[in-house]
Length: 222
Ligand code: GRF
Image 1 (cartoon, rainbow, N blue to C red):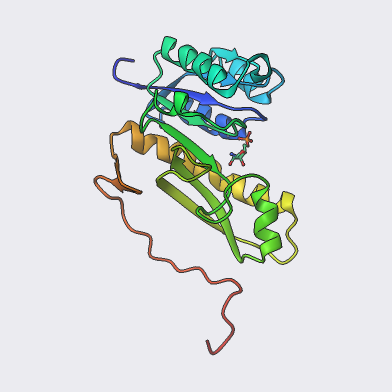
Image 2: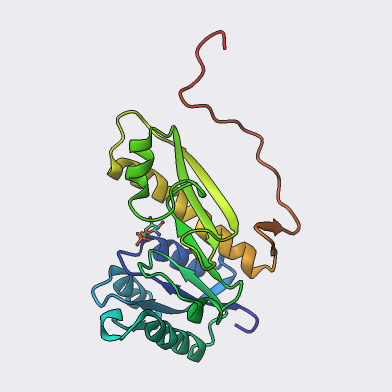
């Protein structure tokens, strides 16, 4: 369809976030077409999900490249050949070099399973539990040169329960990831995201949420 944003999803693993994006595209609510699913891992479940949905796939194993820049240059060539306008990282376990980032300025999104700027990096659900955080969540952000440091588009908050394991918390967060990532892409596709320094403006703004979360719940008399 003319005018529909062409996106590529990059994933290294099982691809449940990819699936949420595929479902949104299929339902016609994403405002974007997934023209390519790319992986660095030939075994990635994400590639199977894409094939089942009839989406073209490409895989380049990073271990076959001399350095990160050479790998990134090859990925960029694949994406450009496919006419990709927005890159959505969804569990893509490679750090991007400037070779990649500069090829898609302001056009790379990532989903991270923590409330940034708390807990960038890996194993962040475990880190939130070990730290004793009462809330965790997920963040969709633009990608810049740092590790999970780019301008934040949208976040969702979940409580951390006393008996949470890394798995139970990750599962609670993942449900929200599958809601906010399609929403972020909808906003981008609609041309409503404007990066201003560290901040992302949403234009026009949606309704502001009014609720307040307290964990643990306030006792009587509070
Ligand atoms: C998600 O938790 C995402 O936030 C992180 O990697 C995980 C990917 O999960 N970046 P999936 O492959 O989408 O199921």
